[in-house]
Length: 194
Image 1: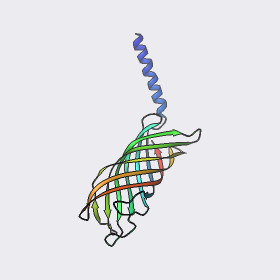
Image 2 (image 1 turned 30 degrees about the vertical axis):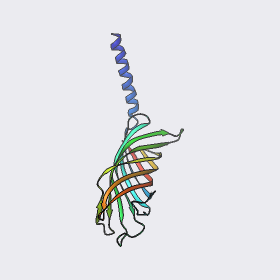
Image 3 (image 1 turned 135 degrees about the vertical axis):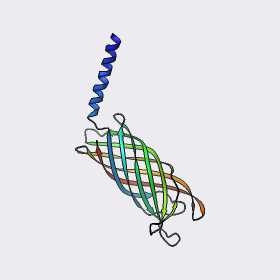
Image 4 (image 1 turned 120 degrees about the vertical axis):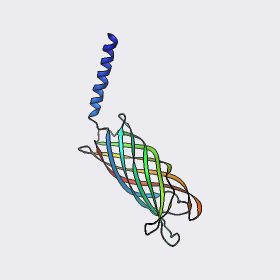
């Protein structure tokens, strides 16, 4: 009998704690966009600053820890002409990882840190938009950080940065080439909690 009562008390406390946490949204969706700067050459091609965006779903596992997954696109252009034209390099694909989020004092502000993986590919496009080369999808990694500013009504502003690293091999103009796309991106986004 004591075991049943103890079990019911533990179950009741877990349920009450679960309902108390239920007020805090566990799911959210973020759209972010911003400028990107290559930190190295792509093959032997120097890149101009570019632009990109991401759509990311978040799930809060515990008070400070969560998971994220989404899709992103980023475009960087060659500084010099290659084969008589400037080429665009578009990285597209999926992002996934873990996130740590913590409040800053009593302010309506949290800082976040993310670490995760990429499953992306690099498309090379001509100035007319014709795909010249596609590396196919492969794994890379991402780290990110920033702040989440509470705007009220389950909306937040999320400025931050991210660093993406993706290495792919391809037959580029008939020559086998290793492409290491590394860039830092300054982003501003909007987040909606559900």
